[in-house]
Length: 237
Image (cartoon, rainbow, N blue to C red; front, side, top):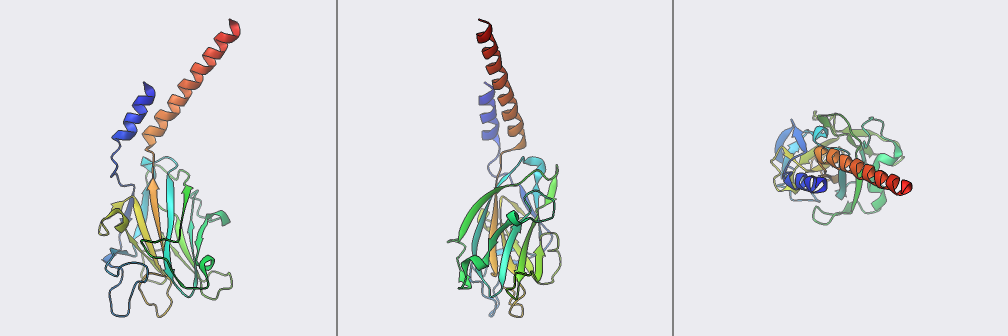
């Protein structure tokens, strides 16, 4: 009966519930000027320059995220890191993608034909909307020494490098909320070229609502207690 209740709760959770949002930034197409051609996706892809991405940890418990490396067109070595435990320190295990792994060509992948997808689990990071901990790292001299970081927290300025964010993969690039956020880096090279195709990744949340986790935990406790009770009765019989 309790199991049925848990399944009902999960089924009742709206599939379209949005757990991420983009705050601030300037709306516009990702490229479109004569000299600004995006080599990973359509130039008219809508979204937000310099916006910050938030995740609602209050509605989630240990959310799983699917991380996809869609492609890049860059002469510099670029990396994407995700702060899995929210400590802001970025350990070696939190480096997710590196363009150097796809050298020597500097044009790889498209939005429809990504290079790689991996999954990770985020640890709880508060009880409300929290800035999602990610950063792009640019090594302009290929000497394994980062020259610039483009962080989520620091993306509210127009300095280079910077990140373009969009929920286009959810079907609406003009939306401010969704479950799959596309992040496109301009690493500041070529002038900069400002076409945001130097590294393109997406983060998709595949959550189990917190209420369902609590209910499933309670169910586990009840099942365990019943098993122990039966075991004890058998031992005294």
